Image (tube, rainbow over all chains, first blue to last red; front, side, top):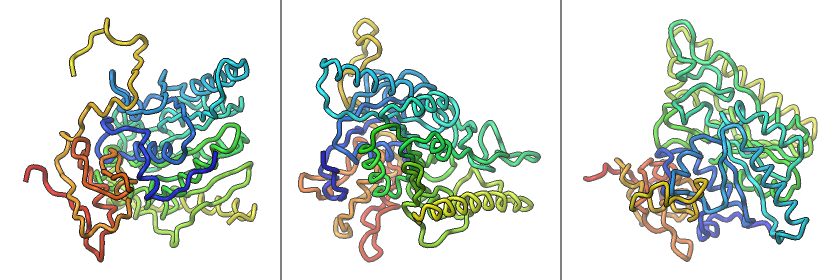
Length: 315
Length: 98
């Protein structure tokens, strides 16, 4: 199959494979991610979904927003579910019971279902080498159950299980760098993307579908309820996350790191933190050290990523 | 839609109709309404690309048309991302019911 041309005007003529009428909150980032992923390709797709916002609001009894075969079984096992489907498909094709239509397999999970609860299933599926793609839409907390901290929650964020108070200033730990952990599995393709850079995201999806084996993609998905921001700034915040290097866009293909897009000018992290109510306490007098600490972590991560890319000569 | 009971539901909670969520109109959630001003529109399609509710109508020629108010939840992403023409936005948010 030839790779689909990524021209907005051509894409707009096509049909969405994720329907309207789903019950995600107004201004949610996750449906934007899903629609861009499904739009990037014409391959038939089968998806599994971990429990999370996306799952509960896209498939409410009698209704489904998906126009592709889709399955949900539990919170922790989206990767196991899709690897089972993939193995069954391969077996049926081999036995001659099914015609091979070049079906692609995707598992969608939120950061809770990927970083924490679904991690062992994900790690296992990657190690077994199934021909599948796992896409994590990372909104940085368990938003579906009411904003509890996850290991993807950034340093300093105020959530219901790490509330910012007089003694403890929000989450004390830095976020887990899952993209790098997945790269350490030695799988052929790992990427980090953002819906604000749709062209970059769709190119990565297209590239991943041409690679056989397990793939992982981490995509930022702003959540205005949990981030305590406005309903209209999902894309604006995703853009700021990229420009401040909080969420760098890169890919690791066969162990070689490449930064796929660099901001023209690296903005200070406060530009990303300021519009979000979950970081409000960090701007209170006396809490400057929190901002400095958060900035230092982002700088160190960005520095490390640049060095890694430079090592491979893939600036 | 008539209410279904357990005897009439497919086994295993299977939903047999793809994209059936379209029967559920989320437009009633809206408190702010996007208004499209055609003369300021440069047909960049950013609103269509960033709409989380697939509520920006596009015709067969790939040209942008109005909004699908049956599903638009009024989040305002389209209005914020709209580049407009010469500083004039092609999408503005108005209070619903005005």
